[in-house]
Image (cartoon, rainbow, N blue to C red; front, side):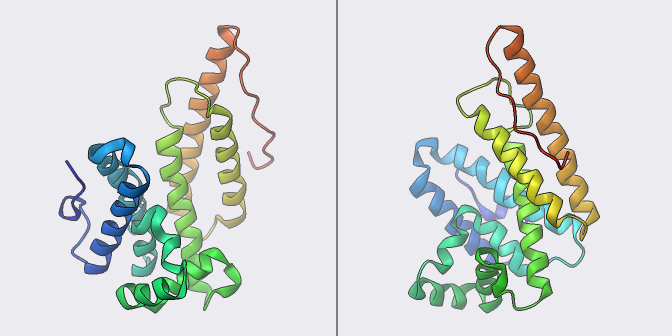
Length: 206
């Protein structure tokens, strides 16, 4: 079944509904090989879940940060060129577009709240990445080394931005712990079958 905003569990909000429609269209255009059902699962498990994560753990969440989270991998396209940006400002408001510019270049932040929101977006999306790519993974594949690198990169950045939202931080730390457990279990299984496991690079933040 294709994704429908009405089944997302999110409140009625025309900007958010439009954001999910744009994200879904981006996925249809760029990930069509997965089909409508898997794309719908991605919508629920990644952009929608990340948005709910911020809303559930941060009392002062902003509509703009949730909008960018719901745009998912399509978010960068709203500042792709002047014409698209103008349309995005009409649809989502100036602050949403300015927040996307802040994500691309923190020096463009209009205020501290924008920097706060970019950190929240990074952490919430990082949890989605770990949930999708690492937690519960049952076998090693050709992306195993890449997953270790992604995990270590997530933790390195998290170490520099954590502290503003303890509840959201705790969600990230729990996901990172489960990710390490899953990947390390795969390495042990590979060693037991005489396959050379990937040795993750040293991460000083653990």
